[in-house]
Image (cartoon, rainbow, N blue to C red; front, side):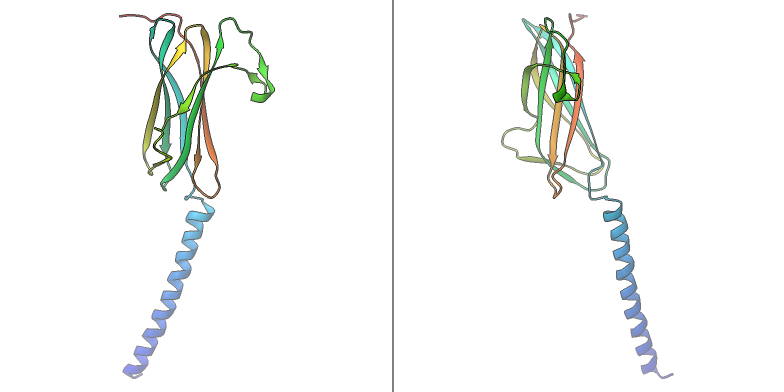
Length: 176
């Protein structure tokens, strides 16, 4: 074989290797991002309520939403909102079809956003855990409250995520 034949053979092998690398890369992308859906959220979302103290007829409480991105892609979210409803001491415990037969908390105590008004959305990077809080007041005549939190993902699917926490309103605070 001449040098020219070796060059042609090497060029043909290089072309085949390039085509194979594109095929293998395409299969990898398909398996990694389409089939395993790594581009979609792997988010843990939780809600919590911490009672800070009491003053006059109210409890000061911190509403907490925690988002942990356990996935491998950054996620953008919007409409990060909450509401707090209560069951007052004088209320009967009723269930509601609206809540799938669960206990109804008929009194709206607070509602709002975990984001300042000037922000339309937020994002969370892979491996990041973020805590958002909102300070509100809870009337002392409430015996139980429920915190509902939610947000929407800013992707083509427009899915959302929710978290809830129910808490007993303290009767007294222990001063140390």
